Amino acid sequence: MSDQSTPYLSLENVSKTFAGYQALADVSLNIRQGEVLCLLGDNGAGKSTLIKVLSGFHQPTSGTVRVEGEEVTLKTPRSAAERGISTVHQFGGTFPLMSLGRSFFVGVEPKKGVGPFKVFDKKLANAVVVEQMQQMGITRVTDGERLVGSLSGGERQVSAIARAVYFGAKVLILDEPTAALGVKEAAHVLRIIMQARQRGIAVVLVTHNVTHAMSVGDHFAVLIHGRKADDFAKGERTREEITDLMAGGEAMAELEAELADLTGTTNDIH
Amino acid sequence: MFDFKALTRRAEFAAFVGTLAVYLFFLYFGWPTFPTVLVTAGWVNVAAELGIVALPIALVMISGHLDLSVGSNIAAAAITYALLCGHYGLPDVIGLPAGLAVGTFFGFLNGLIVTKTKVSSFIVTLAMSFFIRGLIFGVTKLIVDNVQVAVDVDPWVEKTFGGRIYLAYENAIYLFLIMALVISWILYKTTFGNWIFAIGGDETSARAAGVPVERTTIFLFMGSGFGAALLGVTTVALYGSAQVSAGQDKVFYSIIAVVVGGVLLTGGYGSPLGVIFGTMTFAIVTSGVNSTGWGADWSLLIIGLLLLVAVLANNTFRNLALSGGKVTTTATTPDPPRLPEPVLEPSMEKENDHV
Image (spheres, chains in turn orange, cyan):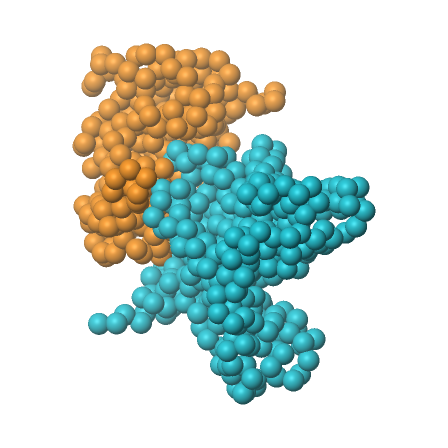
């Protein structure tokens, strides 16, 4: 384990309160390069708040955020981005009616020409986006003029990840990237996550899906009611234990028994 | 080879089809008056004047906002010009730029209020529209005790902003073409243009990507204020007077032209070329009716129908573009949203797998 090295990004006793409601309480996390940290938890457990703190949308009410050991304040998403923290939202956070080339470079548009006649380099933008998508295994994309909205959910996720990686993200925060995807597409996105990890990127994966988490995760943190209920490395817990934790501590077996009472047999629950 | 499918996927294609359709319609029903040089000049002038206002508004609408204050802004610029030069006798080199500055300033106010208060631009610019109209009514009545101000326009202004190119064709056509080139340049060739699409597509994502959303939005409202002011001073140059109530009809006409031109009302999509077709379609319908002998009253009915048809057609073409050219619209994953929950599967529970 690489527990001795300084984590790239870390939270120390971070709390976040919204008008009297405590969304996060005393959460500490270490996010290391070349590792996938899976953030697990039920709806409302505080996962969204946590990634908003990490990506600069929210500032913690108390506690410290460190980047490479140095205490920082991530005031805006931009200041987080400048430190290499990149967030990809559930639907890819992209612009459905923009061309792939244009949307890939929003905010960091490539230019060509001189002086006041510098223009947006559409050719370069389109070429780069096609190349990046091809590298990520989306081979059917051959034209950067294509609208983002014409891609499938998985392809949009992949393009958003490709964008973050291309612009040198050190930390990649993925919010439920596989939630709305079919089995094949989800597998593709998980493979891309492994590729990013291999490049030495720290990945924070927020998910509901224990199977997806177990297939790529190196480290796991479980949130319950804004508190970190458990924090463990790969291989330290069984699938049942993780599932139980995610169900809010209530044993899954109990739930299954309850369901069985209602339906007669567990096998019908699918 | 000529790629017809790629052409149909362009934002302006539906708008072009619309323009062609209404032109052919009036060519048939307005024969032989409609295609004459003078009648053509009539609708081209209407299109040019409307386009000067509609093109900058198109950028505002692509960014996801609306500007309902342009009508009042047209009058504000015209009245400023006419009061300074016609009433106070200042030279046109002061009055004309002052008119443009007033329009741009009200645009700046719109942008500032919209970005600072987060109140919808629909409400902000509607309020601003009444505010400006009331202001110029009050000020003009106070100064000249009238609702219109006459002005002796300098010959150089008459030759540039006013005046005719050939027969009845107004110089406004030049302004329209320059405006079209500038707007297209901004939208397609500058990074600023990319930000406009991004803000209209998803403001939060645009901000997260580092786009200066506030600055861009304020600049766009200044642009639409300037466009309205440009038309305001142009009408003064053409007719030698300014009226307090001028430009009222332009608010909805410009929005109609922009929407017929294929700009999505919710933002994120559209093209200046489409808006040019939109203004032409609008101008052909309003002027063409006069060639038919049916009476001008019917033009409003046709415009109403046209707006509805245009929006429906635009939706169809946009879906076509989103499907990447395929005729069917199955752009999204074909898998049903039912996700199997693997943890409940008995086979998986048996494997006591440590990862």
